[in-house]
Length: 268
Image 1 (tube, rainbow, N blue to C red):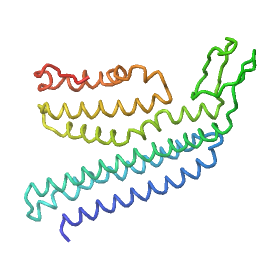
Image 2: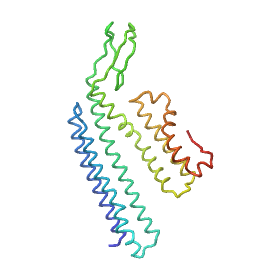
Image 3: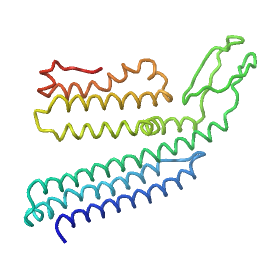
Image 4: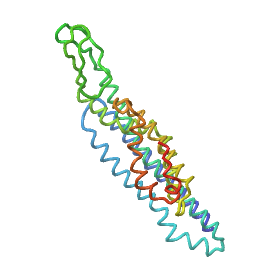
């Protein structure tokens, strides 16, 4: 069997093992979620996912470790030209990126599932809010923290203080559910960032602009989803996006020759 065929077989083996570990973690995670949906300590799930993450990262690191230790020279020694060797190497890099993305998705998926399960239980237990002065009733607002408002009937202060289960649903879900909603934008941003990092310096302006655009698209989608949990984020979405882009502009884009020569052309 040729070195190229052995390399393809090795990548398939790593992919299969990675999928198996994720599937086992998903099953175990869902079983645990069913036990704590109505309350209880959910930290064991975080610890479990931490251990799974370590196992998956070890599998991912084996790809390039094996390439450098066994495959690189073997492909050339069989008389393959450099472009063939480079294509095989890129195949391993791409496989590693796909597995990394799948690993990230596993944790987000389970934490979002836990948040939704707790939210469903907490929502079912909600009761009308009653004004202490005039007994007017209000439906509980969509909130994961204390909310106060004047009674429309008598002007007295009315408040809604979510219970611990509802608060935990918000704490768990604020990032996880928002990130899950922006999954496709996240993947596009990751791909654009990897293309930018792979480009030789000085990096072309087009590559930098593509990375910038993908990040802006991601932040808009993510923050729009997160505003359901934190309404203040929706008051000035573009300002929130600019705040999150500032670090990239300052420490990445502004260090690139093509970007500076073009007048630092920020899209937002």
